[in-house]
Length: 456
Image (cartoon, rainbow, N blue to C red; front, top):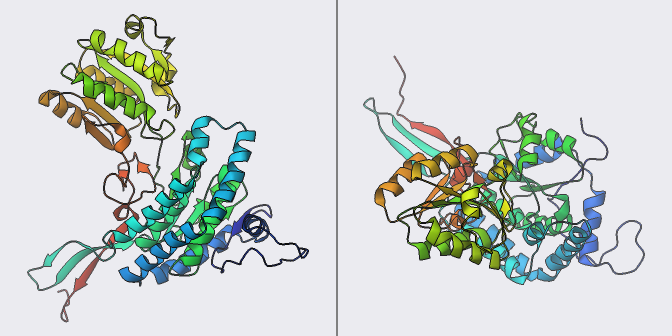
């Protein structure tokens, strides 16, 4: 099933200095970035072999104690900062290629690394190290009447494959979470982040607590993705983190369990009883603070009782922030001289990931919830209101992973929720929903202790 063109990197070998010679080189010195690009291109391993190596590593990871895992995460964080120049050089190559390929500003922002972002990635690994170890945690237990002690305890899943687009920070976030939760990880990033991912995986693999625990798949296309998603017995879970195209590519072929870290068509609803100053601040933050991420708002709904007062001001502020506005008829009548476009039915279903916002007027919290039910993706939904009954109705009636009352949707994030880093945000209901953190990367088993017990 594996074609010769599909390449995967076995990331269980020590990093070379970048100044050594490889076959076919002259005596000229090579930059670190040219080293890891060459390593990516020349080391061919089939996907089954790569997953088998990860499976072997997972059996060793489950035996490690917290101190060993935390030491590895701190070593990864320190190495990232020590190799800051290599990381930024690699990312600069990806950014240049992305601009030449015509990537949008939002996608380029997701791809870009700078010193601050690299330090934040390193700090994220340290934050994961500081979290309690979920492995071995008792979920419930007790002594039965027959004298058996039954405990339900958390255990690692085994091998987690993460498929993701554009954002190189996911490489370290996902590796840190998997290693801390006792899982081996197989990473398959976007071609737009080839050089960034290569150096980041190199750092993570070198300092992982078990050889082979961090693997990188490189090259290939949809056929390769399908092969990774059908490694029954070797891969225990695959988490695709990307748009609908990635989701559809996996839905029809995956035979291993999948948790979709899916798209976010998020809404902010400004209720009749809203504090309009807070509503404006929340709306601007949810849309403009970082528009290219899945927890950014894509639709603003405003109750008709406050629309005449709120919308002229809000539309102007959004326009001044560079937001393109696509509106319904009632919103258009309140826009004044603010430029707006007529919203189409497609706009209500679109995750823009850009400075574009759909806006509509509704007549009740029930109508807002009905709109969200038709068009939302089950990610993050917010109501701004001082009416407790409206807030409770929204909390109970909106079917989403995260529901906010008087707060921006931008808080949907494992770090913001105190979970450390996250692999993504699940909009499913089984087995994880919301930010996928350490506990979501575990399953459980029952440990039963007896004293010569036999069943009669």
